[in-house]
Image (cartoon, rainbow, N blue to C red):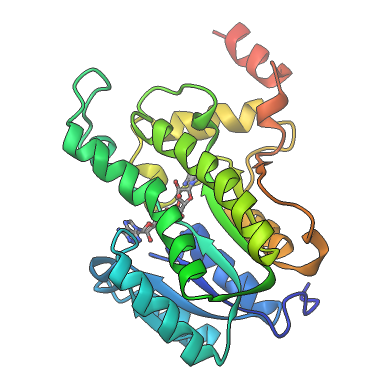
Length: 271
Ligand SMILES: NC(=O)c1ccc[n+]([C@@H]2O[C@H](COP(=O)([O-])OP(=O)(O)OC[C@H]3O[C@@H](n4cnc5c(N)ncnc54)[C@H](O)[C@@H]3O)[C@@H](O)[C@H]2O)c1
């Protein structure tokens, strides 16, 4: 299905941990569309070694960076411009982690140091990425920056815990930085709110199988897959979406505007 939508475009993709990662599928899709990029992840994630397979397939360099560490980000952006031979056209922030969720702490018993870590890793890192890009003048005009969100920013879900606050902050940062980057460099900034997806981050949420099944039944089109999300991100990086900015874009098979479906009614009635 490749159409060279991203031919000549250069960027950075954060967050490909293993082949289930949304960032991994995105790297494959961007590569198929002719984009070139640097892959990055936290040093501890790179130690798994999986990312090297992806890098080989896509002809990409891998540069380690903890997205909460501004020095790491500065080095990442300058090295990426060297490796790619110029400024960047796209950045994908596909990063999320909550120690409270990981360790199953209840919402009434949060560890506040961990909560700050959740915010730093899952939301403030997005600001750090963009502030670094701005300070190093790393983005080309009409560039596109995307981060991944979840509908728990607007509605509550059991066990999503402090990640709900992190996603609300992430979406707010997209609006505030989108306003700034648009004025400065015509760079657009959006979040994509994705269906629940079976990945390392997703499966850390308690009762995740039930989340998946409920969302599947509540979405007229069914859950959006990681591959479908990757294709949407390609479109958001392409020149066909130049005037879309400061939006939280629902990529959820219709879940967010569905009140009830026959499938859910049938399931309840069958009990
Ligand atoms: N899986 C889902 O159900 C779902 C739904 C909606 C949104 N999302 C979001 O999609 C994004 C990608 O998650 P995924 O589902 O592909 O899972 P994933 O576990 O494959 O990806 C999460 C990534 O975050 C990286 N990361 C964690 N701490 C980091 C740090 N300090 N610096 C740099 N990278 C760090 C991890 O190494 C990993 O690569 C996340 O923002 C997640 O919240 C996921």
